Image (spheres, rainbow, N blue to C red):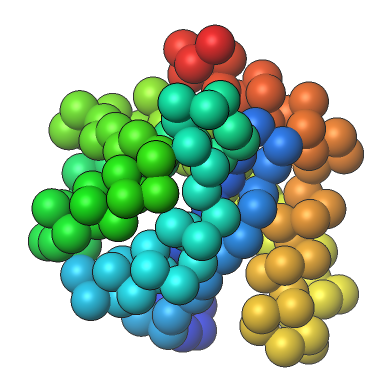
Length: 147
């Protein structure tokens, strides 16, 4: 079944919910991931040693995340944050997987916003897919074993 163009979203998700996102038509490659880390993720990271927010980056093991692994780790650790890679095939350990499931359900349900520009629609769905984003994000992290 044809469902239209494929949109890939790389999002930053913290204990307060979705923080920011980037999207591409089609899929991400290693260069795209490197760009997103440099321009979106790293500028919003805090220091792990100082106990600041957004100080741990959790990535799964998809190819684009691993292509420039050393460069990504250097960028993240360069601002004092920590980088963790999940074990292979472990989406159950990744809070953003739960968040994206809720996001996708909201995306499908809210057909009225289909005429919005894509970036506004993504932002709207990320902002409103949870009734209480902070409680939901904390619950997702706890369910995945992060305390």
